[in-house]
Length: 436
Image 1 (tube, rainbow, N blue to C red):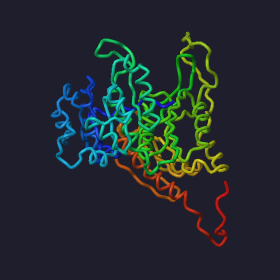
Image 2: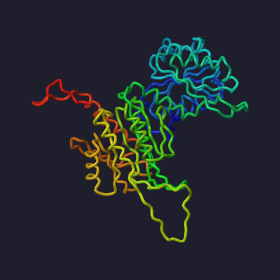
Image 3: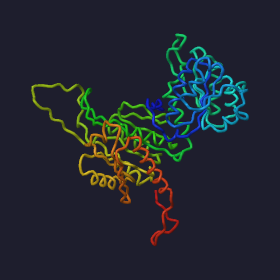
Image 4: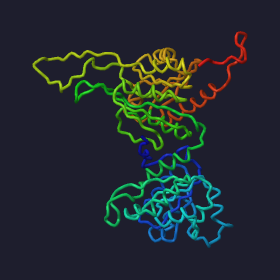
């Protein structure tokens, strides 16, 4: 399934995929125009250069000054005020993306039929960048055959339709037609801006979270993993243009927009999901905290306490996912790059190096989870990266987002190395390559 878009933080930091990107935000005459001001603010805080184009009707709901205040950029409202030569052409040519949010039924009809009688519709017709449309109207208007046909026509032309959501309208009606929330729309925009990035055409599989091994119908064995590092890796891969499959144990995190989310519970379920996804993957990032042991038997009913002062559990090994991946990789050559994680409480580098070699990894990220500000249940991490060439890169305390960025840059380099032909030696003819 494609999950709901991940939220951007209330107080945003500059995000690489947004930094200095020129975004056109079209605002039409809907009560949802007040949400567009929040969207413009969030995109600006993320680093984008946001220029707003408003219809005359939109100015009845929110003033141009509001958008100018939150973006620091001029706001355009009139086709006939020529501050620049042919303004709609300049606006359209310079934009990395045009987002129309909210998009009324009237504007959607104009776009579908190529009508151009105001600055926004003229600019949309001239645009050659990706276009996102966020419908906002009453349920009856949205469900009308004319509107659905117009949206279908736009989608067939490659316009990205974001939403709408279901809920209560300003009229009091309940149904589909509400504009998506600004954080959701920012997720859609982030995904569209990332397409064509350096990992475009690559498939990346990421695992996240701590698996749960059931003891009885109400209890399970697990660990303290929050899944944040895995989700950050998935977002970083998306930001570089990759197609991402996120295999996750139960976590309280929203899916980065554009990632395919596969939910699992146990180590066995994760193993099966990883092996299936890895068949066509270029990269596997194994960030999940997979349980090493599970109860040998799962009780059919809740285990009740009795007079005994203790309870003895018999545990058995769970599947070794990375070992299974290594065995298949030796036969097929896929994934081209595999990155593992080592969460330890002592002798960090020795254990990580052993895992790097025994699991045939290209890179391993080792972190000491006994340190309060690193590893489980926090937003920061202290990581040491070890590679097969003997390289050791120590990363000081960073956010898990920054750790993910550093790891994905290493992955880019490893993919480039994997694409290089083998170097001929005295025992290797130039035409001999790796057999897969």
